[in-house]
Structure formats: C-alpha cells, structure tokens
Length: 111
Image (cartoon, rainbow, N blue to C red; front, side):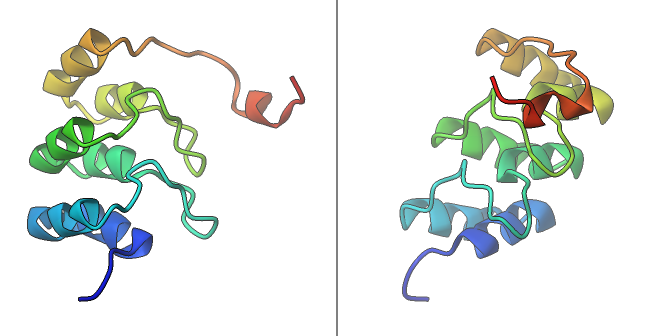
C-alpha cells in the first residue's frame, strides 16, 4: 500500500478491520470525510455495525462526535442510541454530543 484512501478507510470501519483503519488514519486520511458516493462517516458506520474498538479509535484520532452522516441522517449519538451501543451514548454525551430532533429535510434548507 502506498497511501491512505478514504473509501478503504470507510470499508475497513464497516468491516471491523482495525489494522486497516489504523493504516489509513496514519496515512492522514480524514476520518470525517464523506465521499460523494457513500455519504456516511466511518464513525457512524462503525457504530451501526457494532465495531466499538474502531469507533473508539476513530474518536481518539479526530472523528467528529457531532458530525451527521448525510446518507442516513444520523449523528454518532443517534446511531449509538438506535443500535443499542449504550457505552457510546454516554461517551458521546461526555464529548458534548446533544440530541438533535430536526426533520429529515432540515439539512436541505438554506440557512
């Protein structure tokens, strides 16, 4: 491997491959980037699929605990709550994450 790749970082977070997530983060891949084809953050994906070790690693290495995943409209806190990741509900709240209850269409309104 020569350089980090966002799609591979996302796929590694989705699959639970911590070694590959570490590789891409060490290659300076932005853990908050939402590729226009995927539109989901690695943090939200790891929370949805139950990869807690990866979610911890991403949070420790710059993943934004407030960033909404565009594809599913979930913040990390909402993903953790919806998928029963109670440890992360507390952790994300401790990092300042708050409940957001806007309707799905709010993000397309000019503000």
